[in-house]
Length: 294
Ligand SMILES: NC(=O)c1ccc[n+]([C@@H]2O[C@H](COP(=O)([O-])OP(=O)(O)OC[C@H]3O[C@@H](n4cnc5c(N)ncnc54)[C@H](OP(=O)(O)O)[C@@H]3O)[C@@H](O)[C@H]2O)c1
Image (cartoon, rainbow, N blue to C red; front, top):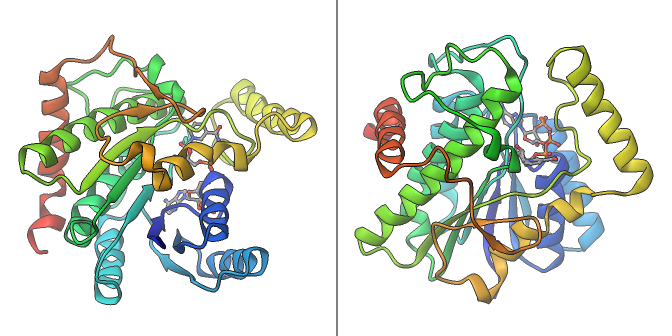
């Protein structure tokens, strides 16, 4: 069955590879990007490569909650349902901390708040699907995260990589919380899972400033990865494609999947149900202005 699939951050890397693979399987794919020219180019490339003409794009800067709301409104105006939402866009940002215009630390805005808000705003369309799936991109680096629950806007975290790891741990906690929330509300046709794509040779870390040695590691990892074909963006897309389409995971929700399509146990060292709830309440309180006016 052809699915309607929206993938954020699909103008490059793993998101683009996921979009191409899903289009090749015949699905209607909507790629999200922040640069219109780039998005148009990727749409043309995917149509050409797959022969599938059902490829469209949507634009939004995911640092802006208002832009996300506007994009969701454009989606809702055009489509009556959504089968799969892949919250793929994400990044490690500079060591120098920055806050978005909404007063949210940048990594938290892009990696944690953007997927949550987009999912909330598209939930009515997801509920119209027989088998709706939300996939949130996490990362293996969540295992190194030690969040301070009194500092959820990461004001006292000085490294971009540390902020990244914390954000990807929070993606897992929010995924678990949303899955439980949907189940409690009796919504059984929408599942939500988190995934780790493995280390893949993409633009990841190529433009952030994380200090001389870390910058060098990212550059070397890309060069070595490309030369030795260690992990291509296509390989990084494997779990996304599996979670989006495979019957084996129909109905599975609140889980974490590794880069080999296997259900895995996320790190539990920092986890408590009370922390998960505190994070959820913090995020939803911040997002309320964009959810309320819906
Ligand atoms: N690559 C890895 O080794 C690895 C490992 C673990 C997890 N991940 C996760 O996998 C996901 C995809 O990463 P990737 O490696 O494919 O990275 P990438 O090549 O840098 O692609 C990131 C995508 O997100 C978009 N994006 C970034 N910031 C945005 C913003 N503010 N607003 C809108 N779109 C934005 C980018 O748009 P532009 O094209 O305009 O830049 C691009 O399409 C991320 O969530 C990442 O954390 C990656």
